[in-house]
Length: 251
Image (cartoon, rainbow, N blue to C red; front, side, top):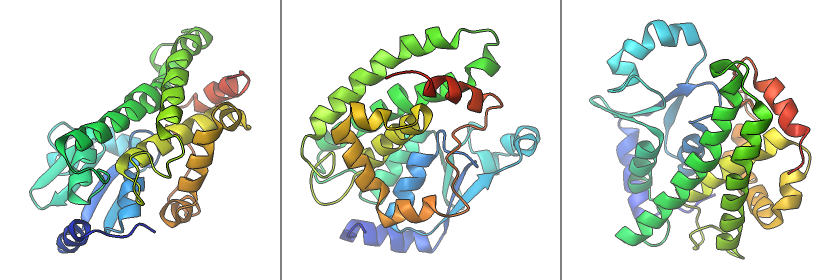
């Protein structure tokens, strides 16, 4: 388990006076990387999973006290008057508050961590979400063409990440994971689930070994074994069909 720094201990002590509330759907999608960071930190928070989509669209989305300024999830409620929305904004707050920016606390170190997080989230995870929802949002769209267009960029990103990781235990070095590790872990795990088999492990062996080590952290392993976790990514009505097509492909 991650050794807590003085900054993290102070943040956790402060947060215990007001239990944070992390609000998102009962899926991985845009929220799971943030859950991994919160779980790994040891901070007490409520994993508030919205299971009723009708309730969300009809009432919760319009309730600023729940859905925040923009009426979007995920939302992290950190005080009676402060809700933080949007994935990367939440990550930035949590990274600073709970000391998850890695060993280099300079502005340049933070920028590098942000770059890794946004690359994993935007170039991989978010692209997969768009693909999984494609048959619903664009009926009749050719999924094969979309995959053919998206996959080369994801391969390029993964190759670069694998090269950057090298023989380090964590992406930014040191003896503790940063939030970049959890964003990249979730992106890789989503791809591993979508393509199935050992395809990702065979194509990116160093990344796969690193991802396996992150998956064995108590915070991750225990959550994955709990009733809170499901490997389902979006709950799109067509998700299983899209994944079946992805699993039939070579990588």
